[in-house]
Image (cartoon, rainbow, N blue to C red; front, side):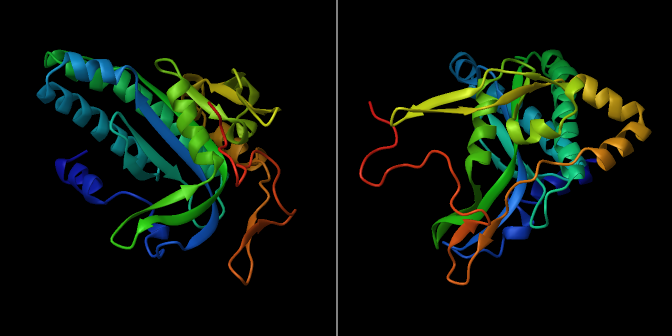
Length: 272
């Protein structure tokens, strides 16, 4: 890729182009695949290394991440300090192609960082890095969080936070999937992982998660176009109950109020 292409990719901005017109406090329902990548052990690196080396490492990882995500039609949401957040899908219903793109981007980014990026860092005498990733798909409410003069467009739901938690819970070079996107992934490319569990008001909650075999998945798609066509035709994303905006602006599902953890109005969600 030419430097001009890299420059254009890096000045396209952050966020999602379909939601730039949102006003503060406005909400729009949608579906999306949320993607997180985190550098493992970066706090330790930040203490052990000087700032110039940290900048070189972050710049190398960030450029590789941007190019990987944009190569598969994703949108860079934000730089998280020691990683990156991205979206696949948008205002239209998220498609199976969006799911393929998100998973392919994860595998491609892994290969680039593990191989060429770390080789370049090592050759320059800089510390190499290890990364982990997390993804999930589902309903979100797009909104502009903040004040009129200081704000950011964000997709709000458990999808965003599960993807972020999955990324932080991975070991080096692992991709952890939430239950919704994992339902779409063929069995040979996933393995049941430890569920995310917590308790609220003496009730147990469990969110299933799966480890993604990104190397086999990407190899299969790279070498077998017929298999890709079969996958897009025969494997459908799980049916997510759509969010509906009523005439008075309230949000609900077609099946009524969704079940699941809800913070009580008169006490903290978690205690202690």
